[in-house]
Amino acid sequence: MSRNRDHQTKCKKEPLIFIRLNYQECVDFLFQQLPMYQNMGKTAFKKDLTNTIKLLEFLNNPHQGKTKWIHVAGTNGKGSVSSIISSILIESGLNVGLYTSPHLVDFTERIRINGSPINRDSVIDFVQRISPVVTSIKPSFFEITVAMAFDFFHNSKVDIGIIEVGLGGRLDSTNVITPILSVITSIGMDHMDMLGDSIEKIAFEKAGIIKPNVPCLISRDISQEAKNIIHKRAYELNSPIEESTHLSSDLFKNCPLKGIYQRENLSTAINSINLLDINISQEHIKLGLRNVVQNSGIRGRWEIHRDSPLVILDTGHNIDGVSSNIHQLKSEYPKRSVHVIWGMVNDKDRKSILKLLPKDWNYHAVRPNVPRGLNEELLATEMNIHSLNVKPYDNIKIAYTDILSKCRSDEIIFIGGSTFLVADFLLETAK
Image (cartoon, rainbow, N blue to C red; front, side, top):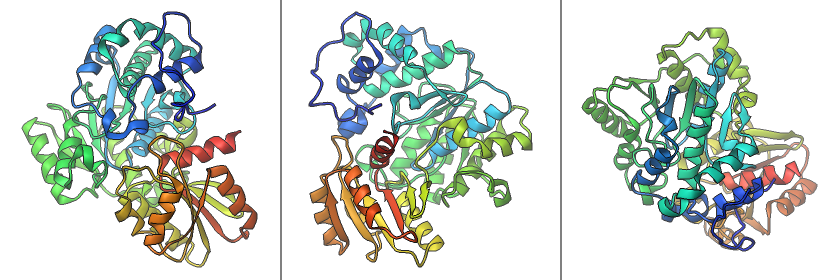
């Protein structure tokens, strides 16, 4: 199933008509008719919550029902932490909703209950139901998707919903809920054109998810500058705030999320669970960690695609994420030759990121298949400026097939630089 991210040249921009659409038509409508961050970048970023509020009012405010919410923000790790929390709660016997973004292969991945994606009929029904107000409200792709998640969770009577922030926090479309817990996983320099050009400004946006009298947990690796901003906001709102504590790595040994960066995410998730007024045992936590992939559908986080040669996928795409990936590759495989299939989008801080890449690795530049994807020739030129040995390829399939045919069994192929490049690879290998 295509991710429908590059259909601009394939689909006419026609108004939604009031007839029964099929799933593909609904997804094409969502992707092509409305502003969408992964396609458009910052021009799709809304500066207020007006459209989300109007759309939810039309749906009778499903986010204000009996469902309890956990709200998770952060520069890196928020998807992993959301997935881990969800998995543990599922193992405790609760009916659990999970909203994350972006998806990697199919739109339905974004909205899950107990690990199962939203069914396509529900997507169709939702798009048809909101048709009468789409023209007047003009909601974005993300606003519609968030509303769909709240509506689906409400109608499915989930006990608790884990909601991952899409971008920032304060002005994010998810920030209409009053959660039982707010979680902030990390704060780094990413999306500076929208969130601010300093750690303090970005921290202010992330702290926007904190609600009056609602406890907040923050990752222990957040910088002191960011912590000061978050603590100030929590104090203003009389919100109890705690910092994640270090947990023994023995607890994580059976967890399939093997990226070094996951250690802090795992600690943050478990500390979050311990703050909830819910009966959760150590056995539930262990089972939740062991079954996190099947319970949440999480993919692309230090994912081992094959063993010989070793092929690793990771969606890390900013300075902190890329630095962690490089560190792990060097520390775990210091003597192995590394081939990197690399892609980036055009609004990232490419200069700072490319400076990090080791010069003794072999690089293969590919354009991620989204409109914001950076042309492979331009990417290769920029990588050459940083003295990187790079060859451009037209697409991920050609690059991977070529490299795999030449790779020795003891070498490594690493695919990363962009969430969308990893998604392209997963889509190709699923065919």
